[in-house]
Length: 216
Length: 386
Image (cartoon, rainbow over all chains, first blue to last red; front, side):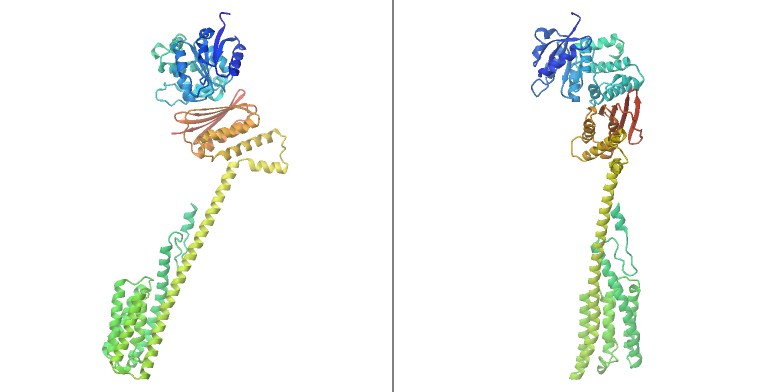
């Protein structure tokens, strides 16, 4: 079972931890939740310290989001999926800039969480529809320049929540939709703060031929 | 707008045309009315004066032997009347210079005509100037009452003074002169009083007309407002009224799928209409959320996503953006994804659902696009903010 992916769930609600553990374990292949707790310590200690993916709730009892904890985890090379109640564009973009591989709202279901966790385990970013909306609506000055097609993919994905639908609408294959989304994330990674996960993300993108060395 | 239309409606009668711009120009209107009264009365006075001068004045000159100076005085009086006629027939007020010169000339003519008469003829039939002067003064000073009274008084004092200087009169003579002075003066003062009455009536008429016009305007505005409201509501109620009528008439069967679909549409339209004027920070999200609630109550699983910072959207654009949303949501059967995206230059409202009916396309300020892709039906309304 050494190949089995593992995750640690940091959330202040036991029901959420149990639900996430169930969702992840019932996917194919299943992802094992090795640790969990209402405190970020569970991601640093014991089995949680070696888990492939950290699923992190931004609001752990307190009113302020635990962005500091997120930063420390990312700097330590941990792959983090932020799982939050808040559907707030700014927070989502902030988490991406810090180096989270995904920002997922709790309104988005099991499917996205499983996919995000699996992608994160491989060091890949995952862009759920709400995050696509945040990227499409991003009006900040330092946002990366996206191509017209990339914007279209973002918007269509945000609007439909279905990659099949996006592929059909734009007349492209499913894998092209995915590579567009990934390239957008690479562009965001390139403008953001340095982080091991981001470096890995960019390196993988070059390996996969998603971007050229010239794009850097 | 309607109030301009009403305000522009002018009431130009043949003699009185102070009905223009009644509403906001009450002062102007009463001055205008005053001018008309003066012009009318002056015209009458011109007639009276001319007739009197031609008959009594000229007649007396012919009948009784007169000093040549009296003829000059008569000529001066006639000239003043003719001069006045120049403005009076054109219904214009007399210029101040003309009035001053006229009064001086008339008073001088009066003094001369009286002076050249032998004292026994004073206030007799030969004293033609006595009665005429008053009418000339009235003609000249109709709209300058204090000056008129002063001139009349001066005229009487001078006349009576001259008469008294000529010798001590006996009682019968005093009586005769008194009757002459009183009758002539009272007639002329009567004309003056009558003019004041007419002025007051005209002012009241102006006020009444203005009030009536204001009332008419208010009524027209209220009517227009009500019509706008009705039209607006009727326009926005969309399919609700005919639907209710058909349900009431039994034309439609509530068990029918199509009827239910139409009811869903009407309910969503109404719900959106109710929240349209709510005072909220983000009215577009508010309206979209209201539409989503109706669909959810119907049992449709709706996922709503909003992204991008809020931008101000005018009410009518909001209406155009949410209109297709209402239709698309009403058509949804079990699932719908509603999204609102505010990007740098656009506001985009989209619905992807399992509906079988497409929303028609539209071009204009808000572009609406609809299409079916496999099991999904998509609708998007886009508005360019810049």
